[in-house]
Image (cartoon, rainbow, N blue to C red; front, side, top):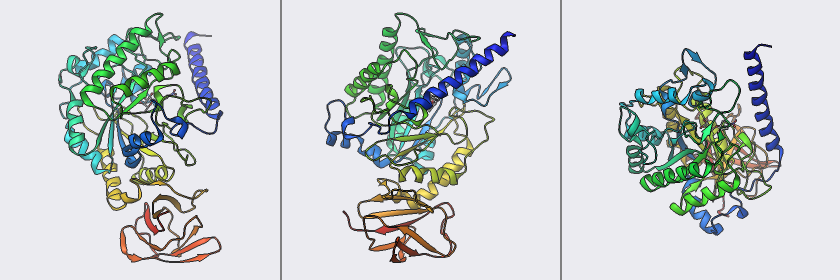
Length: 473
Ligand code: JFZ
């Protein structure tokens, strides 16, 4: 057998094993511990934890921003393109560190406008922004004292866009948060040992040089200390924790470290080893570090009472910008995903991948503007809500709730205008469309629950929201 096909087979087997590992891990345990009463950490009481998580639980909708050197190749290297995600190009195009570093000299985001980015997020109804301070490629998007491999020291731009973005985010009333990768393809402590791969390229399982881990952990801690004290991020969204040299003990230590620097900070579960693969929620064999679960590109099939979680998703098929990825989700899909997630008690972290010039791609801004139009009319049925009360999913759409209110989000409007709603613990006193509160909707009780007599035509083809007013408790 020739060498290349063998390498390919090894690669395939590795990919299959990784997938199988995550599926197997996903099958273990039914009750995730994140956010449950027993999941409190840092010796805080449940009430203290509820206070710390309050803004995040009410926000329901945030913007993820993947922005870094990978925006320069934008998914193409030496004429090679891939179906893989853009920010992993150092891995899939096998780019040695010294080569990848040259992207920094071409990174000059002169069109970056912090006020405009925040306006786009706010206009969509998003309440927080999570941006990559350092992705797997190890490049810092803010000025770092422990590394010259950052946007201020290594690019012609020479400025710190995170400073402007942090300030603008707060000025416009949103919360500013950081993503930070534990795996680091640029740091000398790590290397690649895989057939056909450059030892300094990217890889999903970087190895740690013997004896280098303490140095790297100090490096991370110092960089995080800088980032936390300088920008006061409200969430730290860790990633790249799956490398075999990172342990749950390391995760607990890092969790404690960032909480000590900023006691009210919120940390995702990718700080430690609790996560069940892409499903994102925690295994239940022990208590793991982190405040919320991180399903990736998926929505849990059912709500998880008492568990904090956030689904992160792309709008096309990549996180970091790829100029040829045109597989955009429709505004309808995005809005219904947001509703679906809220109806199960989770948050939606929706990604944009800005260009190397500093622009959020237009297909993203168009969709976000449409989401904003829906949210301005219906935001009350998303922000600060809890999961709906129904044990099985509604056939016509989804439900969210607040004390004294049930919101029905109707995706499929009944042809005869009669909407059968299953019984739940409460009896409604009043029903109306959220978009026209002064026009009451009549309803009658029947054996299965209540029947609403609605207008014949759906007011909103994507999702029309009906309010049912009930007793507070
Ligand atoms: C991770 C990152 O690798 C990715 O670049 C992006 O930032 C996303 C939000 O988070 O996604 C993963 C994590 C783990 C695997 C694949 C993608 N995995 O182990 O298969």
